[in-house]
Image 1 (cartoon, rainbow, N blue to C red):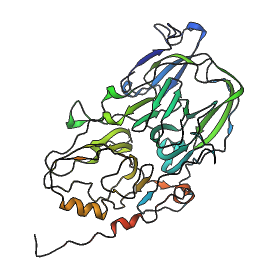
Image 2 (image 1 turned 120 degrees about the vertical axis):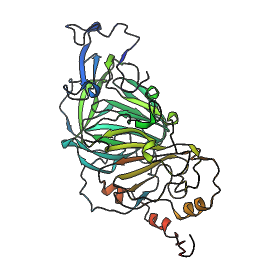
Image 3 (image 1 turned 90 degrees about the vertical axis):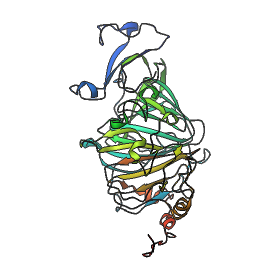
Length: 433
């Protein structure tokens, strides 16, 4: 089903009429189902921000054994485990273990790279890398701390949720919102990025002078249709909760994906990045990169994002008398870059698909020396920019700390990154205007 934040209604066609008519919680639900509400906002939120869905399921999700700590993966929200590092940081592509070496599914392959804030205070973000080579079998995950924006880079994900199934491939994204149970099936070596936000949901950015249309259009967001399995699991089904930054596991003897019908506006969803309507300068200079924002999670300060998801898709460059690649910059925001495919225009060497970079608050960054020299001498004709590529940015108003795994354990940090700017030379001539 299409539409961003819509009130959707869905029932598995195997059980027509499973949705109660005219009310949410009848004394007896059709087919003997249980009614369960999933709230994504406070009950008293204003109507435009009030999020909830009603699920009609074979057994309620409360039927499980007590949660116990689960020691798995490399998740953390301890931002003080290593000294801060203000340097420009770049990572080589993160390694996916070979199947014969080590079986990792989506949960066991999660690694926290950087972040800020605190899930208990409901304000902050974390950026994770996932690398996996196996599907989740008889286990699911839900995030009590916040929302996951998942960006697959290599390999497709078949994500089963309580609301139905989504197939998410590279160059698509999906959002699994707080509290939604999901399981991930993969088809080989798989890798990607996750932006997690605490305390806010993702929204479409306001368009202002752009007008009514453009950027990511609401109708291009897709929501799964109801699908259920009535499956007993005598050996035990594991429900994993990410709670206050740690993992906990509970056992139950049935599949959690037993929702026969649902209705509401609090759902998982996906989006194909090729559908983004690019806005750009057609005269001179750069428009700010905020024009490439797909989704935003707002902070309490007007106009300041807790986190933005920004992409740099193929487009035309036509600006006159303009240095067309990204300009040199020092930013009051933190900029984390990833590359899904191709080459990023400002760094054609070194920044690779499956890798990443982080330019922290007020740390200078910009085109490498080769890019500067080439773009300064280029004949300014209309040209296709970023053809065959897709780079993205997680931008945040928070100052991000890098984890020990990111700086040391992963062994993927490019310690020679700073050298890409060393060949820059002075062109200053006081006698030449």
